Length: 630
Image (cartoon, rainbow, N blue to C red; front, side):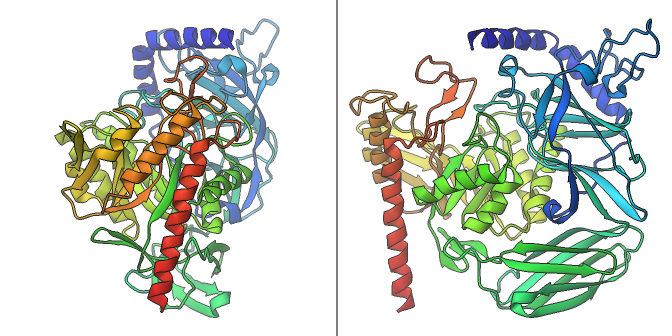
């Protein structure tokens, strides 16, 4: 372990030494790729005819980027470029790379936990996979990536397809005219380094897992296919469904029929010359909720393409200080979590990962999860639909980034767009968060207001929040915390992160803390908590013990009950997770230990304190519903 840490540190220092030259070179590389673009996202990839490219890929670890740039930092275009997959043509031909004799890594997967020497590695790794694909006539083929962290440059058969930036959202390339019946080779240069101008920036409190971290799929569709669609409960009504759809291909004007068999509903509509149609029709669905996670099979049948999906219908809105689910006030009993697997070290991505993590949340008593600090994999939100958990989805506008850089803003907006496009049919997703713990400034306020406007324009049916930090007024033996961040004016729901008892003051100080707000809006306490090493015991005043964390939660819960405008909580965090910021031997060992569950799956004592609070909240909610019913 120590050797791997030292090796990783050496690589990272070298990367820092060369970072300025490399950033310039990467920008030149991306400029050269400007004519290649990712395709519009295809809705509902799981329902499509797909061929998985998951499995073992050949890889070359390239800390100096010799596969992309020459020694003058100029982009390579000759056979020395790794994406050419060039083979020696004679015994004297000099070729200094070879995928076929290189080692492998599993896809999906991060490289950090698959190979000990790469635990701390940040830089470029080249992935290569060969495949055959005899594409039938009158069909189109797309290459779909669930996510690649962070920058992906993609090549097929020695020619570029394009690039994508952002480590947690999906992207597609059309390869219809480029795929061959046999002997295709796909090369992906993955670079997990983030710079000051990127989203997130190079300073975070989670592990920077590099690699092709989510599934890769070849998706076959008809020449004209249903590229996107949206169905949801009509705004302001519980007895209507509205939406839109978009075709892609040469036959854009056609009749499309929408069916919901369980509701005995069928309606035909006509797309316009652009392939688009909007629709609205009466219906009386059973509304989706945590108590009733009802999903309906929706069938969309066009002249050239058919697709089906399970979709729930519900409303989410704010009225004063209340959050209303399907018109009734709801308290969001939640927990925050990172995308780390409960089954093995590293990134979560599978249905089983999602099922276990969300089962733990349900065991805790949750009706809500905050998926921090970036869009999690699609299995998480689809499983939340099925299990009845509301979801806060977030983009990694985290701490301090370049607020005045228009390219950084564009990057953040694009990641939001890709997340919304993927998940806009998920009933579970009720909140989009545009930021976490960002320092107040005029430039930051303008940046976040642009993101808030972007979300409201792209998806006006969901709520927008951000995890803020409030101002504190010390009054001697008492304290008043005021939510005074000006960006709260633009949000639907206020989020706030606070760590009374861990980073500031003592757990008992929560007892003499009062919360006030300038805004007549609901508050979700989006983070609170403290660290504990599972199995380490002592009195309630000893840091790192389970008893300290347990005591902290008791005082926090007592304080939270006194906040009149509190409408939800998502304490930090469900499970211990890796973080390079956490260096303390024995207690941290490069893990953030604020989990209610250890990285080995064991429940800490604070788990049961929060579980009891949520059981009480659920019982009170049931009594209110019963009273209203009578």
